[in-house]
Amino acid sequence: MIKFLNPSYVFKLSGKLLNIFKTFLPPLVIVGLIFSLFLSPKDYIQGDSVRIMYVHVPSAWISLISFVAISFFCILNFLFKLKNVTLIYKSLAPIGLTFNIIAIITGSLWGQPTWGTWWAWDARLTSMLVLMFFYIAFIFSYKFITNSERSIKACAFISVLGLINVIIIKYSVEWWSTLHQPSSISLTNETTVHFSMLVPLGLMVFALFMYVAVIFLMKYRIETIRIKKKSIKKI
Amino acid sequence: MLLKKVKNRLSILITLSLISIFTIFLILKVLEDNVLYFYSPSEIKNSNNINLKKKMRIGGMVKKGSIQSNKSEIKFIVTDLNNEIIVSYSGTVPALFAEGKGVVAEGNLKDKKFFIAKRILAKHDENYMPPELKESLSKDAK
Image 1 (cartoon, chains in turn blue, red):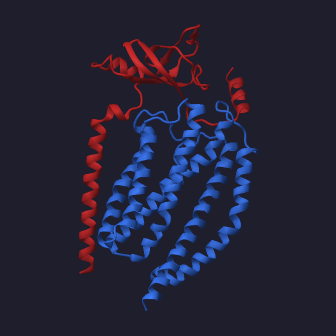
Image 2: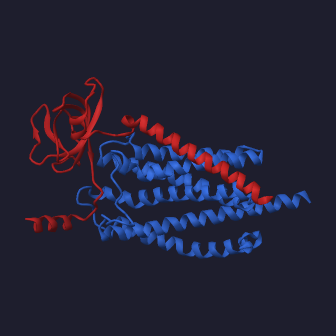
Image 3: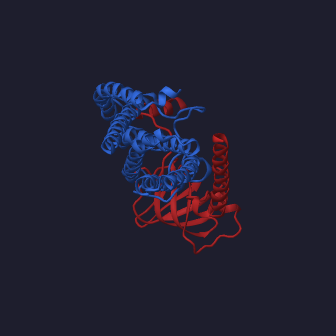
């Protein structure tokens, strides 16, 4: 277990993983896009505008999962003072924010031809926007608070509130009346997306998750090298 | 000694979480009218204090066979399968507005049975399927 936290082991492992992911990423993206744009049917109501789903849904999932992940590591750091994990959430947070914004923008582009509006202040959309602010606050907390004690406390505080927001995002379409439709994909109930559309969705989820992994590992490695350079300079 | 500090931080975290959950729950309960995007016809029927001057939204399904459109306005019935409200609207409707599909109307209630809409939004459900499948499903249904 301790071996996992050894920085040089982690660095080596990250390099190996990065090489694997970098090889598979371009073909995966291309195959995903071919299925999304050409090899899948249009929707019986929405026509071709349903294809935005293949970017919108993975992006939304990434922004939610990333926030849960950074909260997990931030709280771990707060409780056990594990300095090594700060690098994990510092590398992941900007990615989560980017995909949150992508989800909001693609959602807006999808909403106009289908609902008839670019935006609505319903529970789902509003809570996703709130998540964006949580991400920004989180990033500000570790970037601009120089006192490390206060920085960790601020990040932990934002994580707790943000996690409650993530739960609200997930259940907003069930608890309240919203313009956004209820979930189509469920682990427990029936999934109401046809198989011909689940294939491109699955491919794009896979592709975008791998993209996140690549960017995360690159950022993680750059920050590790930066820290090493700083400590060498001090000597 | 290390464990005591961790326990301390954990209890701070748990207390903070519980207070936050409780506070947010209360806020959402109090502001429920604003969190709800629309009311259903049944909610309108059952509510006692409706402010007719306040702009609001109602939502539900467009009742099959209820769309009547002439030059100046379009009239249709919004139903939630238990209760109905007649909606009148002048303007263009979104492309996905159709009978048997979801709709959200923004405007004012004239009375409990009649709604004057300033804006119509189409609400689509969570089902995604190709057109051929829908055709064969409705053929089977017939």
